[in-house]
Figure (cartoon, rainbow, N blue to C red):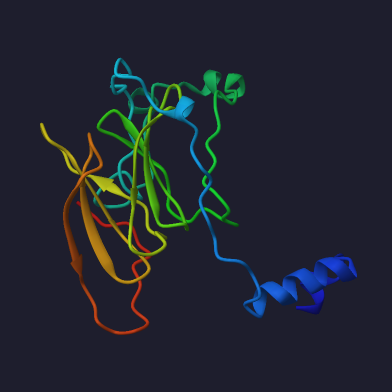
Length: 185
């Protein structure tokens, strides 16, 4: 660790040591203001999607310009349209997913959020039992559902439109079991 910490001040090294020793407050979520909620007229955005970790069962992690709705010439023109606060977390582990007209994001606070991809307004949020380190995958069809896992080896299925729990299954009883990978659908 000496090499990694060589450019840190004494105060910064102490902060890292305190963190590694477990002297860090529990991650918490920020209160979401009412103004961040999507209004009743905020319809899902139908357009390009990226569903799951690799966007295909083979995890190709490839999307053509037609599927993305972007050309190479569009890339330098991209700008930040909105930002969303995941709460008091130090990293984001689950890859965001765009499917079923929504942007789905997970958080180390145990929350899963469904946002409007165009405006960033919040359709719903769901509190899992433990931190969520996996990404999500969304089923196809008329009533899509969201699948993900948490840090206590629970798998979840939520209604993609409402965020209501469809089912929850504890998949492994080992005390160290966690789910960190995005499920495949």
